[in-house]
Image (cartoon, rainbow, N blue to C red; front, top):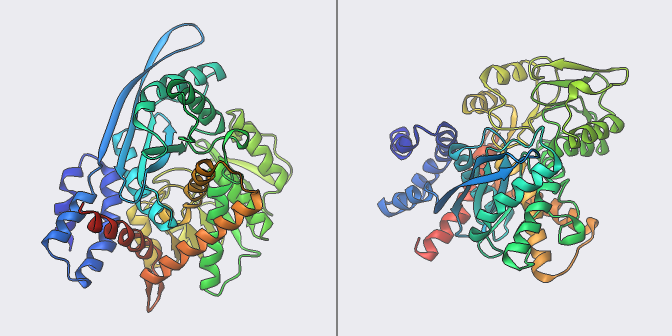
Amino acid sequence: MHSDITRLTRTFQDQPLFRDAVTEFLESVLPYLETQGADAETLARLERLLEPERTISFKVVWEDDKGILHHNRGFRVQFNSVLGPYKGGLRFDPSVNEDVLKFLGFEQIFKNALTGLPLGGGKGGSDFDPKGKSDAEIRRFCVAFMSELARHIGPNTDVPAGDIGVGGREIGYMYGAYKRLQNLTNGTLSGKGVGYGGSYVRTEATGYGAVYFIQAMLIHANKEIRGMRAVISGSGNVATHVALKLLEDGAIPLTLSDREGYIHAHEGLSKEVILLVQEIKERQGTLSSLTLPLGCTYHAGTPWSAVAADMYIPSATQNEIALHDAEAIIAHGATLVAEAANMPTTLEGVNAFQKAGVLFGPAKAVNAGGVAVSGLEMAQNAGHIEWSAADVDLKLRTIMAKIHATCVEYGAGETGVNYVKGANIGGFVRVFKAMTQLGW
């Protein structure tokens, strides 16, 4: 098996994030295929699955408030459309490059497949940094970015959403540009405002969905979420809505973080503090600038080794939990680690958690709530209808329960559920079956 993984990943050695995503996937899928009696044709089809159908790169020229022109790189990786139109977020961050987007797009294929919705997988974005830019500069960048991307997307081709650096404001500016360019109102971006085609619960969906999946993991393990203490990284939509939903369910969120440090409340973050974090992040502020109430402190660095808890929920970005962080979390006696961000744990960290018997929920299952509600937004746009928040939330709960059941179906073993294996195989089976039937 290891020789097959080496052979299949040999062309990705200069793209370490994508290589690691493929390696983790193959470590689950290749043994499964062996049990199914895979032949040469099957392995050739698997190899084709590892290559994007299309990678688009382009220059984005935009004007700052002083009239000076700047340029950034824009990308869209349209990875696999066997189940439906490409679906995945746009990320605006200096770290964006082809490696980052290939890894995210590859993960998106199977995340989307797990939802049961007719969605392919893709990802895109730019190395543009929205931090420190005026609203007018961000609007001009979004218009310039969409002036190129618009020709490559559409409701039955590719429906982007938001990601790091791309929230409701940016989606609004890009959708406005798309409508003017194409003279169409067809819902081609998701994450829009409710007043112009967006869905209720879309902002909360990734965070809420993560907690619904965590609840299912704990119930399956005969454990109770109420009273459990949780360390959360990140301070954007995902992290803050994870914290709010945990509070609602009687759990105790202890931390939120950004790139500079983290805030820690020994008795748990209050709803007021979480909403304060949301407010300052909307203004592009930092946690270090917050005036915190008694019992809540700010610290530089990361919380993994410093704060003991029952649950650890990385909700920021990729590779934020390395092996030494995982070892510290294990030493704290953690019950559960759930990836609410995209692949935030290194392969070595994942292996450490699994060997230690920590319940580990991988990103492609845990954080699928965002794309699930994006798919529901697409359905509402296609039917020119609007569902209530309660209706959407119920559908989200149902989808996350289905994803958990799929993970159990394909990942159950004598010592419990291997959720990494279950998510990888569960998503793969649906995609691969469709590829086979379509002759891809």
